[in-house]
Length: 132
Image (tube, rainbow, N blue to C red):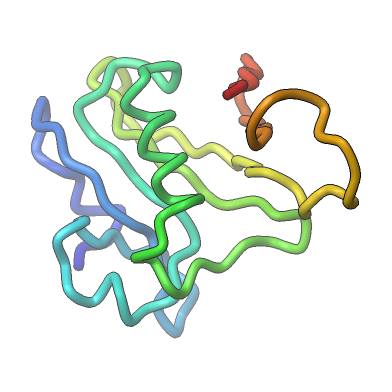
């Protein structure tokens, strides 16, 4: 576990999950940390990418949303989670509030083939919607 004050090594690509301690400070867990399966996870972090629109950021967000291995994900009342990006082009970490898919739609014909996925990056200057 590490706190936000101990930044991941510059240029290295790492990723993991976010949790909070008893004082409500963010703690960074590596993906491989066994504690990540026992603690409530409020989001995720990545380092070594250049921009939030990097496909690795989006795939990691999707993995956080849909992985059956993550048992204790905690979302806000509006269904949001936290994303922290340690971009190679920024000195300070960037924080994003992300919203995953909403509640399951009512029974009936689906709007398109297969399951629908709607993700929003709420606190960025860009909003990207992914379609399956």
